Amino acid sequence: MKKISLLLVLSILFTQQAEAARGRQPCSGTKGGIAHCTSDGRFVCNDGSLSQSKRFCSG
Image (cartoon, rainbow, N blue to C red; front, side, top):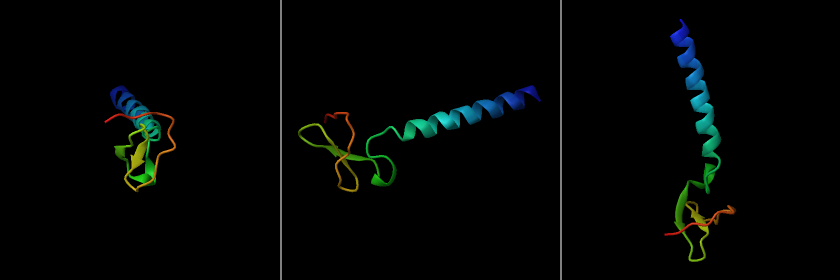
């Protein structure tokens, strides 16, 4: 019973961490992810918009 309880708690904690990290990506949510970078280092989202992220990208 202790093993099952521990496994349940760990899986809940892992799921919450994954959900929190998902929102920190540029172009997350309905924007569909990152398509490419502009020449000045901004993220272009898959929906064609520019990300409002303060991060810079390369490549």
